Image: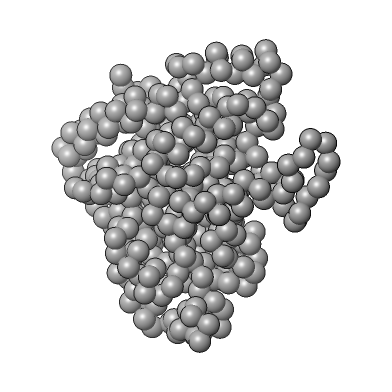
Length: 361
Ligand SMILES: *Cc1c(COP(=O)(O)O)cnc(C)c1O
C-alpha cells in the first residue's frame, strides 16, 4: 500500500540522480529504523537474507559450526546459516508462539551439549561447536524471549534474531530484534513495510555496527579518490531509491499496525464462532504486528487443510499453508534435528488468511 510520500521521495532520487549506492535516504532510513525499534544501530542492506547472513557472521558463526534454528521457518533462515559454511541444527517450536520452544531446547541441550575448556558448547554427537540460536518471530508473534535468553546464557550461545516478519512487534514492551547480539529485518514486498527488496541489521554494539556497514559496502577505506579495501567483503548495500521508499513506508507503519490489529480483531470475532478451528492469538504480555493472520485447525489433517485451501483459492481468497519444515527439504533433511512433534503438527494445522492493510480502514 503506497499512500504516503513514496512518489515524492522516489521522484527526488530521480530528479537529483541519487538513485544508487550513495544518498541521503539510506542514512535517514537507518536513523528512522533505529529510532522506531529503539535499537542503537540499524544498517540497511539489499534484502533480509543478506541481513541475516551478515548478522550470523558478526555474531561469530564460522564454517563447520552448528546454528540452532527452528525448522518451522522460511527457507532464508537455513540458507543464511549455510552461506557461513555452518550447519543448521533444527529445533522444535511451541504451540503458543509458533516460535522456538526454549524449555524444550534447554532439555535437549542438557542431553546433547557438552562444554569444552574453550568455554564453548559442543554437540556430543557431531563434535561441532554449537555457536548460536536464531529465534524467528513467526508471522509477527514474539518468541518467549526471557526464557530463551537464559538458555543462551547457560550454554554460551550467541542470540541472533530473525525479525524479518516482526517489525512493529514487541515482547514485554521491547521491540523484537533488540534482544540479541544482532538481528535481521526484511522489507521484501510481502512484509509489513517494503522497499521493493531490502533488509536491515540491528545491533546495540557499536563495533559490530561499524563492521556491518564496512563489510556490506566492499570494505572500502574512506578516501576522496583511492580504491583501497582492507578485507574480502560484500556489496550488499541498499540503493538510495529503495531507502527513499522505505522512509515513506516507515512513516505509515503506525497506521499499518493499527489496521492490522483491527483486522485481527475482526478475524478473531468471526473464527471464534466456527467449529473445528481456532484463530491464532498473541500472548497477553506481547504485542504482535499481526503481519500474517493464521487459523489453526483443531487437529492436524492434511486433507482437510488442502480442501480448505483449494476451496478458498477457487473463491479468489488467497489462503496459504505454512512452510514445509526445513528438516524435510532435500538439501536440509540430513542436518541434525531434535524431536519435531509440534512443528509437524502445526504444519498440517495452520492456514494463513489474507492480512493486507488494504482489507480494513
Ligand atoms: C522474508 C523472510 C526472510 C528473508 O527476507 P528477504 O528480504 O526476502 O531476503 C527471512 N526470514 C524470514 C522468516 C522471512 O519471512
